[in-house]
Image (cartoon, rainbow, N blue to C red; front, side, top):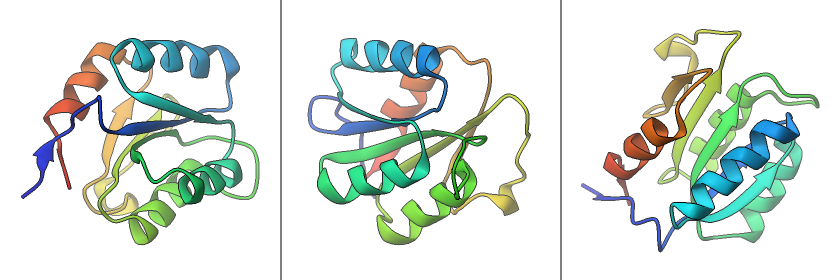
Length: 126
């Protein structure tokens, strides 16, 4: 069983195509002590995951431009980086558990970043 997330030792990747939302989340999670990375689409997120081994948490929006949406990205991350905590957010879609990768967490938008932080900090991460 993993330990709860230690924000001082783990990076978080925010995958969000809306710049204002992305930057608000970046500021919030930096203030919370995370090393924060950002991507506006799944393709760039995949590149960052390969370059930054400190990323242990991914918060992705579902609806994004490009060849891969947030759900496909979440499945890719789960398969490639199984110990990464994956949170999937959407205001337009409500995902069924069967549509998400194992152990992923769905977050409805709009959400309170403090509640998301609490969820992250209480989730076991290897």
